[in-house]
Length: 387
Image (cartoon, rainbow, N blue to C red):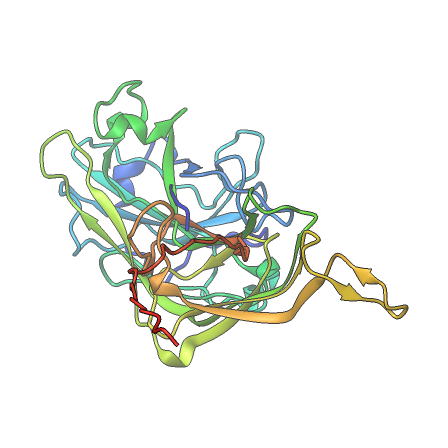
């Protein structure tokens, strides 16, 4: 994951709406298909909404789509005829994910199975959304007649209920032989661990954080800063994700899976009240000119004894405090530049971590002086007259 500066336990069901007969005789007396996972970057949060340890949390579920190719290979015309939104639960203890009924590798090595998965699992009904503890989550998967699934997702305004929505890379054309071969060769050798299909998940969201940095030249006894609020406005909070797969350009290389967000609407723009102590999982998006970052704060400065006021007794007081209460500064988000560059960050990308540094650096009022040279001499002649 690049860094730039400036789910549930329940009934295990096989979705029947898009399951077709793929010839059970091809799979008899074969090895069962099992799953494991790996995420591209560890994250942590106390409520486990952000994932840790590079894996799906124990007790949480992924949704799996599997495509059986009878003597063919992956194409966008492939149908999820082998598994369609199959729930698979991480039961922990370094065991394969649990699902039922078990599916088996085809007996003929010419036959292939392709896989893609997402997290967190949903059964496409609003009833199971509340079990995630994410009451405003609008995550649903669209079971495709062919090709890869699409997802509709909405971000919860409550940071504690935001979800680390992820989609795996497509694993195309796995043959039966790679299930037992300890070194099946590129691109299969990174896709299996102890005979399991190994999903590589990528964060579909953008991770946003805010930090306050006080310039080291600021004397702490003379300048005081109190952050009162951070607000993001005109930020899209709902869109549609469609993964796409690009085949390898050369033999024995891997293809690539891209995460594509689309179908943004101005009716789905919102405001987020943020804190420096939280990480926000927000929709990747091109930041519009209307997207704003607003910072509200109190500032107080003291002089170094060169300014005097007088107390009630008429005595001079050599320090004066200047207070700027509830000051508000607003920035156009797409003009803020990456630290150390002149490049503005005008879009949040999937699987990227953006850190907005609020740098406190009061500008001191200082004096200097310059003596201007005397101007041109203007001589005068005066002749006194005798009186």
